[in-house]
Every structure is written in C-alpha cells, then in structure tokens.
Amino acid sequence: MRKVLLIYTGGTIGMVKDPKTGELKSFNFDYLYEHVPELERFQLELSSVSFKNPIDSSEMTLCHWVDLVEIIEKNYVKYDGFVILHGSDTMAFTSSALSFMLQGIRKPIVLTGSQLPIGTIRTDGKENLITAVEIAAAIDEFGEPIVQEVAVYFEYSLYRGNRCSKVSANQFEAFQSPNHPELAVAGVNIDYAKDKLYRTTKSSPSFTKKMSSSVGLLTIYPGIPITSYASLFDVRINKALVLASFGAGNAPSHPELQSLITNYIASGGIVLNVTQCNSGSVKQGAYHTSSFFQKSGVISGRDMTTEAALTKLQFLVANVTTSEEIISLLQVNIAGEISES
Ligand code: ASP
Image (cartoon, rainbow, N blue to C red; front, side, top):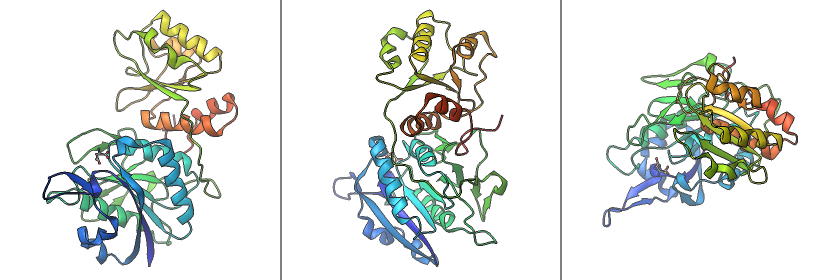
C-alpha cells in the first residue's frame, strides 16, 4: 500500500461553516473522513498532520516554510508522497520556496487548496484534495513516483510549484503557469506531460531550513516617487532586491532610480529584474529603457515568476556565502524555475 501524508496548514479548504453563526472555521482534521468519505475508497494508507494553529495563508512566514520542511524531512522515508493543504493566496510563494528548500527530492509534494470550503455544497476542495492525493500516490511502470518535485494541483491542472501564480480571486481556475506547460491535466484520466516533469540530478535530498528575510521587492509604476523607496536600496536592510519592471524588463530612465541601483550594487547589493507581465521574459537591452540595467549589473530574471525570484533570493542569500556565487546561481536553473534560453 502506498503511503501519503496530508499536511494541513490552514486556508479555506479545511473550513466548514458554523451553521449557527455562518462563520468559516477550521475543522478538526481528525474528522477528515467525515467530510471527504471518498478518501476511504483509495487503496492507500493516508495519514494526516496539522499545523497546531492552522492559518489563513496570508499569515504565511518563512518560519512556516521551515516547519513544512521539518515535517517533510521527518517523514520523507516513511511516506511515498505528500499533499500540503494550503490557502490559495500565498500558495505559489510556498510552492516556490519549497522547491528551493527541498532540492534533490524524488517524491511528489503536491500543494492544493480551494476557493470554497470543503464543508460547502459546491466546494472545489473535494476534487482538488482527492486528485492531489491520487497524484501524490501515482507511480509509473517502473514503480517510481511519476511526480518527483514540488507541484500545485488546482481545478484539473497540475503545475510546477515554482512556475505558477494565483491569477483569480474568485474563479475555480485560480492558478496559471504561462511560461511552463502544465505537468498534468486531470480529465477522465490524469494525463501527465512526462517530458515536462522535473528530475533532479542530485544524489540525495537536502532539507534546507534557512531562508533570509533580507530580500526586498519593488514594483515599478508610472510616476513612482523613487526617493520614498530609497531605504529598500540599503544593503544593511536588504542584501538583494527583486525589481518587478514593465514588459521585457523596462523601467523609467529616472536618474534617482539609476543612482540608487548603481550605489546599491557598488555596496554589494544584488538586483534581480523580473517582468510584471504574467507571461514572457525579461530581455535587458532590447529597449533603451532596459539598457541601463544591462550596463549596471542588474541580473535578468528571464521568465521567472515574481514568487520564484523572491524565494530563490531568500534561499540563496541565506545559504550561499559569496555574492559572486549567488549571482551565478541566479542565472541558472536550480529547481526548474527558469526556461533554458
Ligand atoms: N485567504 C485564504 C487563504 O489563502 C484563501 C484560500 O484559502 O484560498 O488562506
């Protein structure tokens, strides 16, 4: 019997409506089968563990990611796959972070959640949970797990964890992964895109429990009063900064912005340029408005999502000693987060 561990962190999926007050409350996970009796029909051994205090995923912190890594490390050998129940709001940040913290894994870690609580009639949570469990237990013809990476399952699609973003606050199709194909589509069968699945080259998994909070994120917008953001460019506060720029990596030719970046990089800061668009890639130097970045040593984040760029830096800043090494790792694929150029 395959063994799957469900890890409940909180979020809408694990909630039921209190019939008296109408409020959404987390249900006791010991009673999971009462809410999703279909799970009992799987031919597998399902166990569950819950965060002591389940949270709305807006409350997610770096410490919660470390807690998840600890739970997975403790149970990695014992279980064949893991399903993390998580609020959808920050799911793409958590899945990106875990992809870096759990490099070298050869087992599926599937995050899922829902737009409607599992205790409501039209919930999308049951299908999401049931299929996520099936994916976490799935093996190929050689008996190997089909998925060997951190992934997000939502509304009939399985996405690479560090390639997707939440795109809708109310549609059941809440996630998209425009720069990387879906890993699987669930219809009558679950069709896996076998050549798109990530395979590690590492010989053993690493369970990294350090992430740095000294990483900033600045979204450029027309008319930005850049001096009010000057503190972001202080290396004592932020060792690295993600710049979410326009289109193919463009920004206003603002002398203040340029001198903040120049001084920041000269004092050891690292700037990573990603696009605000939800698909496509940064191409520094394609337009005059991005050639400054190219000349000043800003790193192109190419087609990384903002979630992947931010968490990759949080991971690298905490775990890699030299800036040179961080800069070189930013430009290569370490967990399937960038398309080969
Ligand atoms: N606010 C909720 C959360 O992210 C929404 C959800 O569960 O989808 O925890």
